[in-house]
Length: 378
Image 1: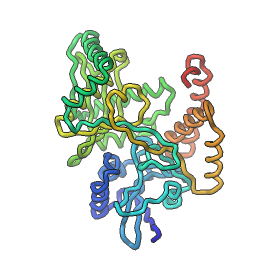
Image 2: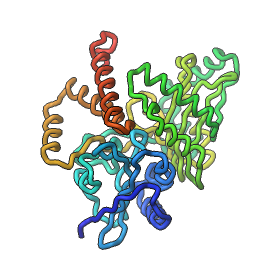
Image 3: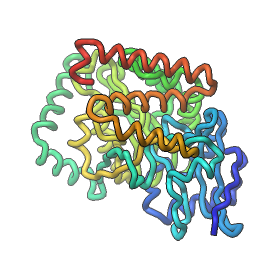
Image 4: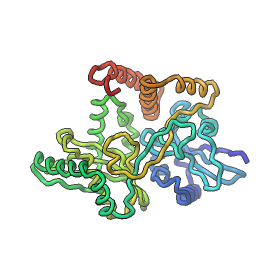
């Protein structure tokens, strides 16, 4: 039986739909990350511009949901580029539509995803990493330290060095919901974006509002909170994380420049796992693989899909052709520009803003490729 789709504004989602959505999520381990919970759509949907929910029906019965946002004629998962995992939330017995069919269902020209679950067989796919603490912190850390002795000994030395540099105790505070501390984290992240030439995801404003709403409106068993690594009388690292059920998702990390040599972000992650595992969290999600340190903490790997799918046949063909001819450095450059454009497009709500951001992203990438100091790592 064919799917029929109703498109509603996110704030129009009713309690009956929310209860059904929650049942779909709880009955399928595919949705074991907090980003699939209806609570995040309820909170973020009031803030994200052009936020919508697709309600999927078969034979008049609701069988699925997909929260998203429109940017021109392109659909993005709701909250993108901050939405790390997304996909159709379906009843477990339902046949899953192909990712390629989604733009037509959403009445969009295209759909851009970077963490589509389950991973699409057509790729391209990216690895994500998690740590399993179901046996408890002591057992987990003992195994990790035995397997990666040098890494964890180095971090113990880094902690002592940080205490000496700051002339004070190093300790971690969790469950922080101070708006001023979040403002500090965002300022650190914006400075990082400027230094690295990445698009400032907080310049558009609504992304900041989403984080503040999630942090200041915790619901039962769901919410966002910060952790702070203190060294002396000042923070050395900050991180905003999203949590729900037994899962804790590391989300927005940053650290003070004067503490960088002491790996404060890594120390904060380690402390957070120790402290929050005592509260019953058993899975800690580190997101995309890439940063070297994650392999020392994580023992679960999954795959998600990152791509843009098009509704019109000629655009699909052109995109496949480009992917087919791009290899080596050309493919890496193409992937980099595609990712940068996806971030810009998801953030910016006007055509002028999107093209301005795209021009800056392209110019910055070309400049970094041309720079002798960057060309070796491009």
